[in-house]
Length: 306
Ligand SMILES: O[C@H]1[C@H](O)[C@@H](O)[C@H](O)[C@@H](O)[C@H]1O
Ligand SMILES: [Fe+2]
Ligand SMILES: [Fe+2]
Image (cartoon, rainbow, N blue to C red; front, side, top):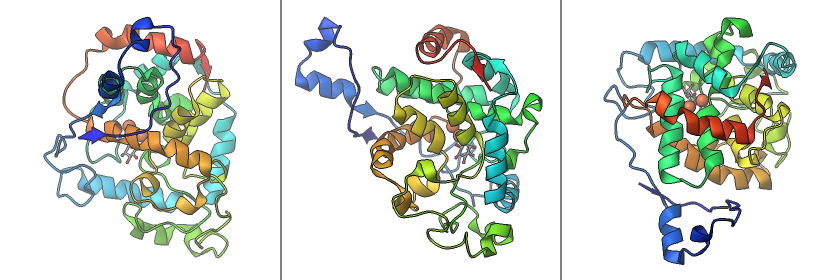
């Protein structure tokens, strides 16, 4: 698969070799070529929530609890509580290691510990976009918010941490996985929350939308509050990578503003790697660690508040 996208990388221009490449060569370097596998490790197509696999029942059970529990009220409380960032201090790499013990119950495509998935995503991007180091790092950290599952983070249940995300405060779109379970969500029958716009206005921008609470919004908060120097597209990817109703099904586009549309191009690129790099191929952690430590050092403080 060839992914064609707009590139806005700001090269420093201090590399003479890079400056002298012909237009044709530049094209070649920038053209991300990624061969997406047809099937996941279980032999099914990716994101098939109806496939009769060993994980089907538990994944559906997961979405039932998730769809019932994610309300405007719940999201408000979680944002406030976790926005305090008063739980611990640690580095990005320490957090990667913490994730080693967790398996994501919402994921029909993966039953590996999370650190494998982070490195597989980052390394697949690095291969195709060697110059976009911010995107490699975004790959490495995009799921770190799953640390909310950890006992020192209140041991949140899986339904409040993982899985696809979607706006609350307006009607739940039918493209959301296992949509039928929203009927039991208290907001479903609330006339302030169950219309197309609900509490929002046309083009209000995703930044003003309450997304269901989970690892995306939490990691976005952590990165932003700790003053990362990642570009806005990196923060956008972290924050909305689980919003499949938007980036795959194109629902909720009426809430986006111009900046969202710009950032969306990168999210679409990223998503291919997040999804299709899930495999049984192991990455040698010690071998790639120095590279990622250098990126962490470039874009983050040594210790972050969580
Ligand atoms: O099961 C997966 C997993 O939890 C991912 O981390 C998340 O980003 C996806 O959207 C979700 O469907
Ligand atoms: Fe994720
Ligand atoms: Fe992921």
